[in-house]
Each structure stands twice: as C-alpha cells, then as structure tokens.
Length: 164
Image 1: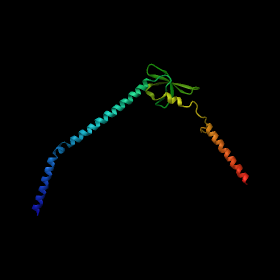
Image 2: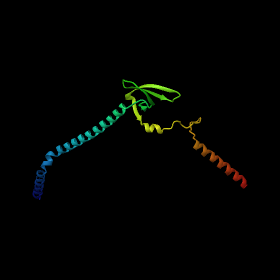
Image 3: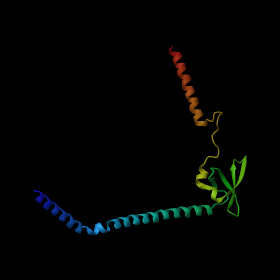
C-alpha cells in the first residue's frame, strides 16, 4: 500500500514537471514582462501629463504677456483691481477701491492669479443694492413684495373684523 502511494506521487511529480516545462517561458520571463508593462504605462502617463502641464503654462504665459491698461485682475492675495499703468520691468500699477476712494498698488506679474475677460466685466452691475444697518440687501422687488404682504395682512384683518 505504501508502495502504491509513492508510485502515485511520483506520477504527479512527473506531471507537474512536464507542465512546468511547457510553461517555462512564462516562468523565466513573466516577471520581466510585467515589469516592462508597468514601466511602459509610467512612460505613457508621464508624457500625457507633461504635455497638459506645458499647454497650461503656455496659455498662462500668453495671457500674462497680453496684459494691458484697463484689464481687470485678481491677485494671489484676493485683491481685485484694474491695471492703470504697465511698467517696463514686469510690474503693474493697479487701481483698487472705488472711483471716489481709489488706491494704487504696484505689483509684480507673478502675483496675478486671475484675469477677468472684458465681456464678463461688462456684465457686472455698476452699483450694488443698498444695505440696511444689519447688512441685509434690499432691492425694489423685495420692497414691493413686503408691501404686498403687509397689504394682504391688513385686508385679512379687516375681513376678520367684518365677519364678527
């Protein structure tokens, strides 16, 4: 019985050896193939991400070189203003504040975070709605709505007193 068990195990061992000889190419080179595939994926990812970054840098450089007097900008410190003067050394004089109380700041080109388009700047309202003491904005539409609700409340009170 022991002899038959050993004979059966030797047959399975030879079957495994035959199978490993058939797959010897993948046994030898499987690790290298996987490593090359990973490296190829990394190279493709690097090329695509590098091209996208270069494209964004080129667009930003084109926008910065096209800055002129009258452009509205936002700095990296979240200051909003309008370019008043372009200095020759890459500096700009920017007007911040309102027309009644302007402030002028000299900034470098590198501190500009965003350039607003002319079309978007023209659609901005010239005047903001007036604010009451508590900071709540009121417009003419809100006032008319408040008046109509007060009138409706008064009418309902009159109707209730007439029914009694």
